[in-house]
Length: 104
Image 1 (tube, rainbow, N blue to C red):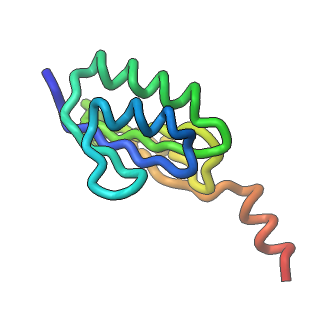
Image 2: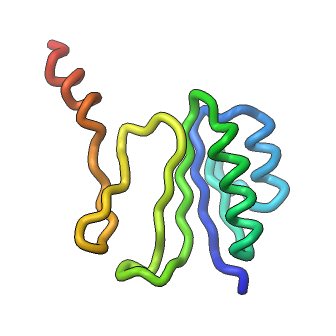
Image 3: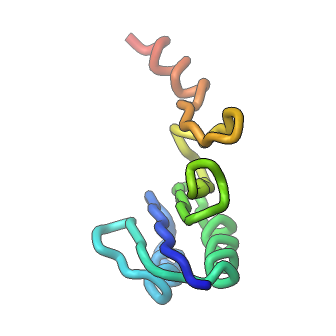
């Protein structure tokens, strides 16, 4: 069964954007939304996460979890999803926080 899928990207190569736009609508730069089957979603995410280079990508899709959705990330991110007793919370990257504290 096809479900709503959202992928947000930052600074990804043009060929990744092209692959995403074949399957999903891009309502604003870097944000892709559409209805995909689980198989197409997995194949598309594998291609995106393998090609993200110095950019970043986030995938959101419905799931049988407490929150009813899952979050996956690829590439360099300031924020990381963390499982906390079955809930996905977002944590700031500790290395980035240390760099901000050290900079006057």
